Length: 105
Figure 1: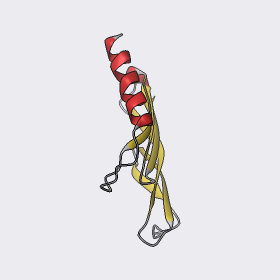
Figure 2 (figure 1 turned 30 degrees about the horizontal axis):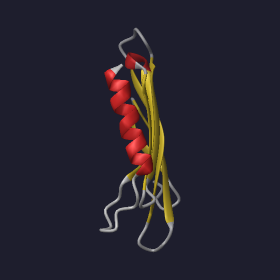
Figure 3 (figure 1 turned 90 degrees about the horizontal axis):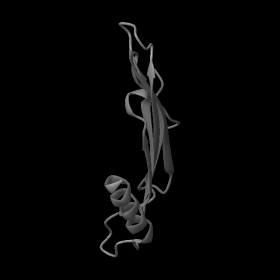
């Protein structure tokens, strides 16, 4: 219960925090759901336009290939004004990013 209260206070403070006039980014949104060995979900957004969301789940339970499969996306504004978006899958085949600005093999 204590960790929930601390988490709730953190989220409330982050949501209420103004953009830092010194140019440092602050967290404006944060969600997290750690469901233990089954996986997790999280998402955040910062005041400078960076965003990320990710979901993981246990796959191949009880086999020698048991592991975590992770899907997610992140985006950020580039210095050229374009918002770059990367989606990805990370599993037993490695990290597999995809985005319009990422060269294709």
